[in-house]
Length: 331
Ligand SMILES: Nc1ncnc2c1ncn2[C@@H]1O[C@H](COP(=O)(O)OP(=O)(O)OP(=O)(O)O)[C@@H](O)[C@H]1O
Ligand SMILES: [Mg+2]
Image 1: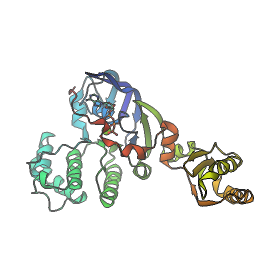
Image 2 (image 1 turned 120 degrees about the horizontal axis):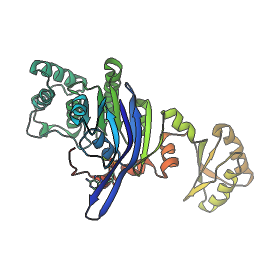
Image 3 (image 1 turned 180 degrees about the horizontal axis):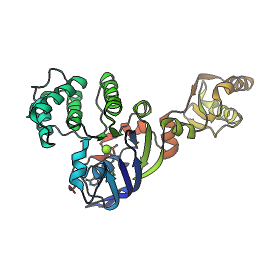
Image 4 (image 1 turned 60 degrees about the vertical axis):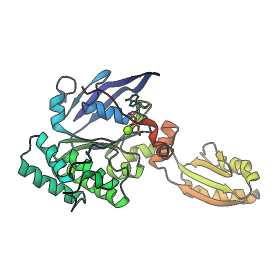
């Protein structure tokens, strides 16, 4: 459904060139739900905009939904749906009209468009908002309207750029159900970016991790988690002055990683953390070392992320304004 080779994009700015995407190869098969993960500025939106014909690649080739991206962008456009990170709804239009207009652009008949639009409004919990001006909707309602626009023509391939950012937990869960439904009932393929690791874990068949413009890992959520060996044991020293000695004891556990110390907190990674915990506590006790808290953590996708990119995705969420895409030429 998507086959890209060496896809790259360099932005030319007054302050020099930005290599936003540096040679991405990717293959997405029909019927897959694929998550595209990476810290802020990694190149996710740029990749999506190239694959949806909105931005011309500097280098590389791709076929998208069976059509060549460079030679036949019109066919690509007709076959896909795209929900932009920044949204696309005009604020003066009425929500229902906007959805219907969008469908007409794709060649649907008005009566079909209205039926399909109303069905989508129901599924996305936008009931009663058909005649409301888009500008008067709440942020989460507006996001769901963006999603309705991207899905109105029942595309076989849908690109969603951070579809659930700004949605409340219930609306997020509802969207997951909807995305799975698209795949299960219509065989649609979904390529989405997200900063929520629980979302990637719960929803995606496969995950691609991009960092600094290159794919650094891919696999199912389980496969990725298995790459991070061992469980984390996190200890909080009662006396901050004991922290170095606690770290030394923890690092002596069989198969332990080096201990990472942060203030009075010590973290090590060990195989079979649960079975090693009792021995660790006894060893600390024998040395007269007291801890306030002990936590055992199974690897999460965030650990995968940290291992692969040296950064936590959660850190990234706090600096979300780092990559505002404003311009870019259409292909
Ligand atoms: N129009 C542009 N002009 C110049 N640089 C750009 C432009 N758009 C994006 N960039 C830069 O390209 C890099 C990749 O940006 P991109 O928007 O693809 O990241 P992203 O992975 O989608 O990040 P986020 O998680 O914040 O949405 C960043 O360094 C960004 O600042
Ligand atoms: Mg982005």
